[in-house]
Amino acid sequence: MTDFPGRRHAKRIGLAIAVVALLPFALPLTIGSHQTVNGELTSYSYLNLTALVAGAVALGYSVRTYSGLRFAQRLTTTYKALLVALVMVALFQLVRGSGVVPAMTECSASYSLDLCRPDSVQ
Image (cartoon, rainbow, N blue to C red; front, side, top):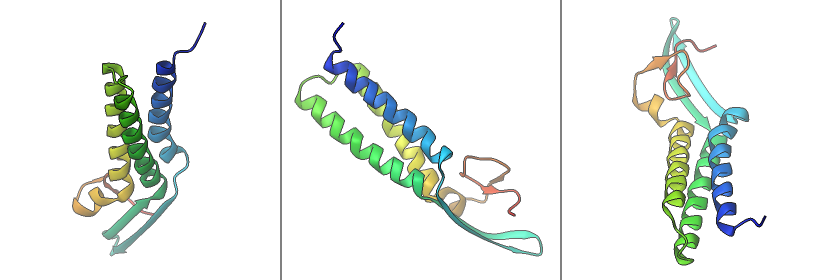
């Protein structure tokens, strides 16, 4: 049984989705700071370098793969769907890793995938 080149692309894109979705949670490299006054959180900043790098690399890989498949006239609906999923996961990781949402909003939660300030900071 031969492996069609198209299947390899689909497997690679699927693997990229899994890596970008899971790696920043499995190996977080974070920089954060917080300040409390009278037991109340007054400032909070957060940066997840793993999520930022994974998101940026995934976006670059998406563009490269899209261009290559389009040039070879092999861009099917399946590839488009997989690439859209990869871009969505990459954008999520970029936003999550940048810490921009907790800095801009006042939301707080005990666990929010780093999209809100923590309820309690140790």
